Figure 1 (cartoon, one colour):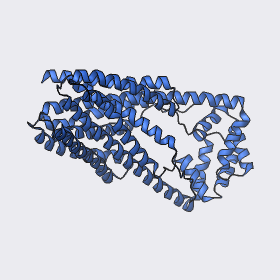
Figure 2 (cartoon, chains in turn brown, green; figure 1 turned 180 degrees about the vertical axis):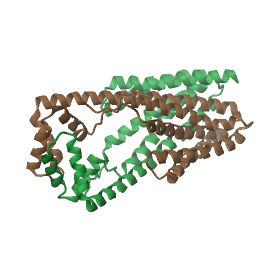
Figure 3 (spheres, rainbow over the protein chains, first blue to last red; figure 1 turned 45 degrees about the vertical axis):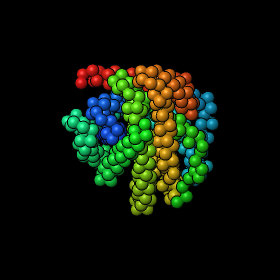
Figure 4 (cartoon, each protein chain N blue to C red; figure 1 turned 120 degrees about the vertical axis):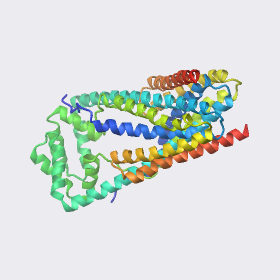
Length: 232
Length: 232
């Protein structure tokens, strides 16, 4: 097997993951703290809840991402082995599958035949072709998934601490909410901007979307938690 | 444009989304409530925090998913238009790109020529081929993303209410934690099992993974929140 492998993870992957984790981390812990600000009268309780959420969220994201990456890797290897067995045992059926892919694009039976015979000359390349074009699977980078999960989890934690700062430097939940909201909205805009730039989306629209999600989540959490608390 | 569109969303998509949302919803609200159980002495505060988290999480997930779906749709349409313009204005360069794809699989220049000429006969099919095989883009279903986001968000909320039940039916956070943990671990195993079955993974391993993530997140949140609270 001479499958292509990127030996060096690009540093932009790291930055993209960090920005995604941070803008997500700014959203839910901010909304949770905001939600509690209308119904809890202690900043310590709000900060404790925020910290518990950050730990829970970053572990769920980090460990979840890591295990999902391993599953993807196992799935790829299992399918790869199956394709190798198939080109070995039922080469005519595999050739027919290649032809079918190109029949869908209106190629003549002669052209289909040319392609399937040419691909069949080299088993490694044939299998690679089937993996990518029949099954739509790209080989997952062995370290990419776990690195990505760790980066996103860590940045989620760092992003989540920003909204809590407002409650650390103030005396009441209401004051905390005002400072936290100002700080978080500023950061959401910045991170939404960079996140969109790095994933090739229009940055201003992206900044507004990320901020809108954060503010909507915080407002809804505040309203529902306050309503619940006035009932009990 | 005669692009293939699935008119009817498969009901299994709905079930998969519901199970994913529910197993995620069981994880973070459970861990948050568990985290608070060592440092807060009122079940009402824990339930309020849980409700705020559920509202925040399901809006972040639902609205986030909806906006991401719209962005993906816009991206696909923009690339589609660009490919149509390219096959119109620089057909020779597009043919060279098709040849390059097959050169990588070791096909002879003659075979490459046959394919690129055959594809070039029908512009719609040619563009479809470039979208899928050059750019790796599949047309996103117009309603799939928003339906999926709504289903995942709603199931997250339903899943999140399960761990809170333990605190509703008990008098102290410690009692609540025991009932909540028992109930949630049972549900995590069930949903991990179904989630894996539906995404084609080994179900028992999947059930253990989902449960492990939930328990690890809850244990870590409990330890960190308790440690923080003993410091202030």
